[in-house]
Amino acid sequence: MSNQSKPLSLIYNHNAGFRIEGPEGVYEQLTAIFSAHGYQTEAYEIQDSQQFEKIMLEVRQRHLASEEPGIVVAAGGDGTLNTVAKHLLNTPISVGILPLGTFNYVARLLDIPLDLLEAAEVIVTGQTKRINVAQINQDIYLNNASLGLYPLFIKKREDYNRIFGRFPLHAYTSALDVLIRDRKELRLEIWVDQKKYPVKTPLIFFGNNPLQLADMNMQIAEAAEQGKVAGVVVSKSDKLTLFKLVYQLIRGKIDQASDISSFAADQIRIESKRKKLIVAIDGEIVEMSPPLNIAVLKNSLSVRVPHASTSV
Image (tube, rainbow, N blue to C red; front, side, top):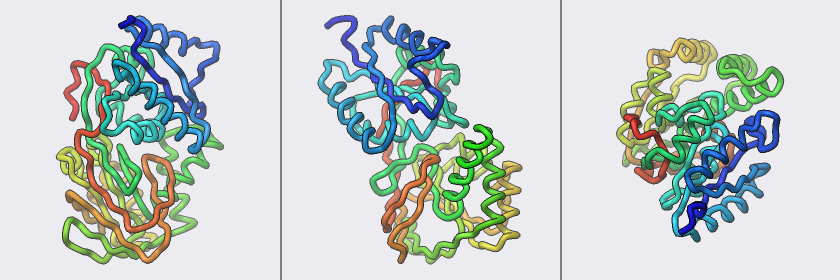
């Protein structure tokens, strides 16, 4: 086999700040690192979801046809990583991460450097680790999925980012903006394993990333680490309760907020009389038809991580 025969596909989102052409020459430095370790790099830009499906079909065929499955690199935030990972579950193809997002929770959980050139070295010299991925119907979430007010927070946050630039503070200011202007309440039936609970809630949140949940001081971090579907539900929708919730979120003490219940299970099923539910998945907004079935696919995704990684 030729030293240049291992495939590496770089999937990037132009809006996330990655450029193939530019004065910085970062792409050339990255490809030089990949080439030095025997990888042939092909770059693909995500422009829209329909085009992306075609790209990932081409990428999968390229890698599965090779003697070595190689690596598919996601250059972007956790949303970009999610879209790439969804197409590589339970395959021999490893995912590499070039973190370009605001929070980069997956990279941080796996001890992947936030410097792009250092992350590239991890991709080609590190080890492969299989991680858990949570599935909600036909989609997946690496960090979190939510219904109710949270998708509105995400949409408003993107409006703030577009106008003022990307800052972590916008996660909080957008939440306050939504609470002042709008409140949504969902009537749901939630099956936690085999038990059914009728719920009226403005917000239900599921977490899969123990680091993100620990940063929020949420007790469900331990359940997520154990491979459970971990969630919290808010039981009141009056503005005072919700403002207190955001205040505790800002303080990093959301578990101390009143009228919040935590739960963990192997499987969750959400039923609703609504034809469509708006769900935020790793920062992206999607419409889903209920029922929603949620489970954790254990050890379903191969990711390149540092050899010294001790993360879960």
